[in-house]
Amino acid sequence: MQDLLGLSPLDIARAVRDVAPEPFRAAQIFQWIHARRAADFTEMTSLPKAMREALAEGFVIGVPKVIARTPAPDGTEKFLFELADGARIEAVYIVESKKTPSWTDPETPGASRITICLSSQAGCAVDCAFCVTGRMGAGRNLTAGEIVGQYLAIARAKGFGPHAANVVFMGMGEPLLNVSQVTRALDLLEEEVSPKRTTVSTAGVVPGIESLAGRPHRPNLAVSLSGADDSTRTKLMPINRTYPLAELFAALKRWPLERGRKITFEYVLIEGVNDTSADAVKLAALVRTLPAKVNLIPLNESKEWLPGLKRPSDATVNAFAKAVVGGGVPVTVRWSKGLQADAACGQLKGREEPRRPRSR
Image 1 (cartoon, rainbow, N blue to C red):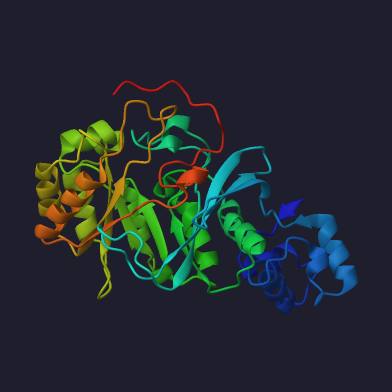
Image 2 (cartoon, rainbow, N blue to C red):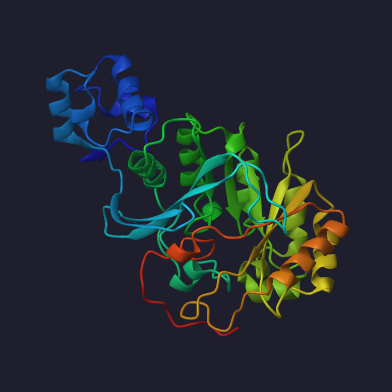
């Protein structure tokens, strides 16, 4: 049966024309799926009963199945989904302060906001040294429906409506290695999540950055950096061999930034690898060539999945942040949410067995 999740209103109209020939029916169905979170045609009460029954015979709404929900004390909740082919992915519901904390005050109070962290692939071939998902190895690309379905399933479970959440593509996978389906997902999400409240994070896939730059409504762009020179970055992120820093930054300088917006650089701090004051000075010098801000992420450790890598002390993190600010670049430290649920940055996996670690 054909899945209607992931289709635009026009595509839905084409798919259901034999069952629901009136043009306005497709718009109704789209609104029921997206704005009203319907997971079944029986919920679409504004459609005639006979039409609902006919739709149920030929179509499905492929919202992924929730296998497990793992809450953390800070309000974060990790969702484990199973897709139609048995693949498993994870996404995260995050509640955080609207007021950006400083690096020295991670608990700055303020009104809360909801952020949904979505996965774009089942697994990841990029193989960053600090990421559990990378230890899984390559998996398949998700469809636009499977991406948006994570958002809708979490919205239904947590009970929030349209225009209530931010969206970040920072879950499992490299979004810009699945740029066609991520682009379609962005189009669908744009109905209720402004591009200004949507962020796509990439390890630096230059052709994907260039493709995304051509969108009329661009999301925020976040680039995982984690090394301010090619040698360090290649050790941590093998993709740097394909798209070294010079090529990456040339593409970023072509990225069309609206007034007041910045490119975010994510930098995972690892003890004894990239956390010295010299590293901080080098980082500031590199990124201040652009309208930029730095998001420092102290490594989220995993002895099983990331053996040998350690989180720096808070004092080291704070000193590093201070040095980057001293170099003229604004900094936020991501004092990670969801650690107790293995839902923090770099911890998503979808299965329990690590593959054999690669040589570092």
